[in-house]
Amino acid sequence: MLEEEEKHNLSIEERSATAAELAALASSLPCELASRLSDVVAENREALVKDFYDNLLANAEAAPFLSPQIVQDRLQHSMRQWLAGLFETRPIASDVFIRSQRKIGAIHARIQVPIFVVMQGARLIKSGIIERLKLLQLPAGDMIQLITYTYDIIDLAVGVMSEAFVEDSQATAQVDQAYRAFALGQDVSLERESQRAALMEWSQSVLLGLYGTSGEEDLPPLGRSDFGLWLQHKAPIIFAELPELDKLRQAVQQMDEVILRRLLDSRSDKTGKMASALEDFQAAIGEIKFLLTEMFRVAAGLESGRDPLTRMLNRRFLSSILTREIKMASTTDTGLSVLLVDVDRFKDINDRYGHSAGDVVIQKIAEAILASSRSSDFVFRYGGEEFLIVLAEADNHSAMAVAEQIRLAIGAQEIALPDGSRASITASIGVATFNGHPDYRYLIEAADKALYKAKQKGRNRCESADFNEPQG
Picture (spheres, rainbow, N blue to C red):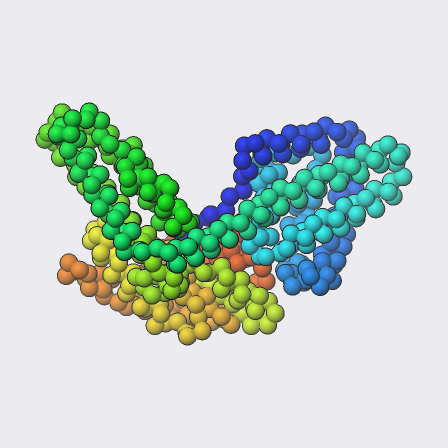
């Protein structure tokens, strides 16, 4: 399913500073004044939100990032919730406050809303609240406290939003920079074979240590070997944020913390335990070799923008394509849909027949999907056994028809596996149609929820997203 990559946590130092500032703000305003402010915001929330979006929609620089329909259907509700949370009378939990503001900031970065637009909106909200506070005709001292608190709490929220906005934007730039450096300067084949050799050299040193011929009592950890140091320091630069990198790190950690420990514990037993531990060790080495090869294979396809195994588009370029298509769908009202296809019980295939059989299945599934897609569609290998199809100018009805066509094409295949056996494969498909929300991840999340629903209902079926359900 969809891997959620968002991070909404500040560093410990920044989190502590924000919590301290939030606590100081809460204690600076007497309870009676805090209650008055909360009442004013609650009573005028609808007007504040309306004024906010009316101004932004009228702004030539802000309007391209919004639409009246999505403002009415989604954004107004979100803004009302934000105001209610910011000015509630009880103290705001700092972790809740930070996560909420950082999530908003990350979304702004993804949908490419300039940070100045966010700050402009904050100024409108502050001015609207202050104008309504003036109608209370409170003593000057009370008014100063209320105005100061209003400015400070909104500025603090926008500050945390801006932090996430900058981080998200920088992360995107770093990925692009890493890709360029890789594409321009790396010898992929040589690097891959060097690391495979380093892995094999380490495994031999473990076996020598296990049987006492190396003179060492402990087995050398993979994480401290030449291969492990390469994985820790050089691989992140070459492979940036490829999901295969994290899987490889986890496999190395499993080797050092579990597999090697079992080998050590079974050292005195040269029969049953030792044989079982050695079998697990060899299986773990095989898995690490596979992940390493897969990571290089994915990276090698980045230069051409295609997955080497399937020749489909690479998911690293999904954001730019979907962002562009969403902008076109917003202005032309021609429709846009996303299909998320997941091979049913794919892990069983890998476990039973091996990774080479899994590769054959992926290739055959890809062929069926490409044969069922239009030349105008964008077809991605989204992850291991997942595929994502962007259907340009397709409403939900036509998207469901394409999804059903793909499902039937996949199910009609009888795939010949490398060992001579044959397998019948099915797939589940989630469908989501653009409803005006400018964040491309919202559309993917909706398709992912629909895919999960298809899995829950028994697999080998297509399900459409229900936008009345919370989308995260």
